[in-house]
Image (cartoon, rainbow, N blue to C red):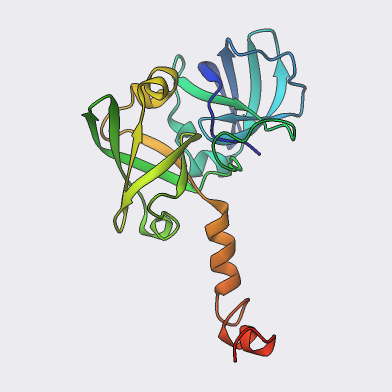
Length: 211
């Protein structure tokens, strides 16, 4: 579990194929003292398991499923990635609850400077669009952001200068792919309200919620 508050950037040191999977080695200046082998770490929004670590680097296996769902498949040596260590129960929840389970990728269609912030217009699959709501939360490359407005398969977010300086969004450009994780709450609500499979009008009437 994560919050979408990025702790620092990492740089891809090496990528090694392992059958259909990949071993990713990332160099970073964030403090890894409290990271143990087997712990989770978010790499540009994808929850990965640390399999080896040193003072300034760590390794993680990336499954074929994760490669298919995320932009990690296009990483090259030297590329920068957003990093966040997993949430501790005594930590502040500064963003929103992020699982690190990426739903798919979105494409940057617009990147426009507005006053001191930058507005992004992101195109996504229609299937994901139903989970994006105005003023709701979304994780973009692991960054917790607020949706300004949304259309059928496009939504808009703003980032402040601090976010631009300290995350990959600062140097992303039009046509680049970013990882998208929608808010988990919307998915559960949809499943519960799916007629015949959860909470529907008959269920509410049967249990006394409707008269």
